Image (cartoon, rainbow, N blue to C red; front, side):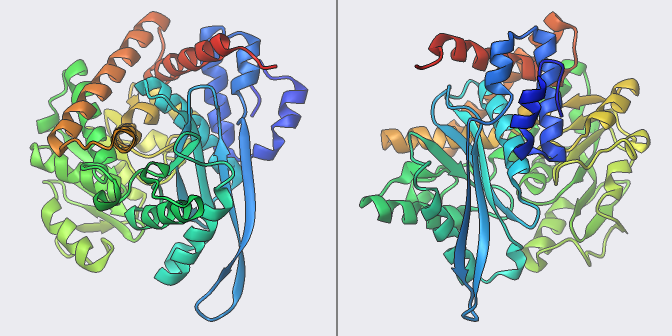
Length: 430
């Protein structure tokens, strides 16, 4: 977990964040810091999260039983403005996972030029086993527990895995009831009627496609003639699949937790989307070859899009990938040993901090609209998003040429330089 800039005391102090995912985030930060020859002061100030909150709280189940739940909120840096990041529900949510994701969110916001530090949170639970009423009570209690550290000028949560507009509405209402007036800016990803924005639901998946278009222009790859395999058919993967199919790309594989679908001559994405809308999962869809959820990673294609969970491309399966380009629609889908193998195989990796930044970018647009009490239409949102992502990609390409490095290190170098300069200008108080 330690990089060469860290001392023994640093490692001991950061041991509470210990997790495989946080080790990956620290490894990336260490390599980028070395590339930049970053001053030891800023390594020390940015290597670990600035603030975290762990809460244990009771939730009454429908049966009358009271169950204790554990929730987290991690804020990586307070230097850039309020912190920003989603909260998720899942059985593996942990402090270390939230710390890693908060760090990546800092770099993502800095790369895109957004006035935020990174944050992340969640509750350890199995949401599929909870009723709507139980999820509402859990969400409202979690929101109430976080009130000391959140606010529209302090920390703005957003949707993540297993959370969406419904949970954001409950969260906003809970916070608003506590302060005595409506505060739409406390969360993003809300229903439009409560101050949400057009285009937020599709923003991450659409942003992946915008970045992919810019990448293909840069490397002279014909996107509309390319085969694409997508691991994950949730909010990100499904939106990306529909957009890619609409512009003429051939989506040859998709998957979700129930399994994968493969068709060498291209899948009917509209029919698959209708099937999932009716049944909830891909399982049982009749008009494609069925494979396992991770098998789609090895399907022959030009473009592979991991849009599911972390650590899916590993040292074990990286030698078998059969693609020219990996675009990381998920957070942290590629382990460092896998990335080294892909580099040796000349497989280009478009890093997550750039590829999936569409969600936080449109969240920023939503927050700005809430602050101004003025709304933009969907066309304006999409055009602003495309411009912002293409500008960020240009910064990555420029940094890669200056430093002679891959795009992940280039993206991180741009972000870390921006945050460390802000930290230098603010100094240390007192």
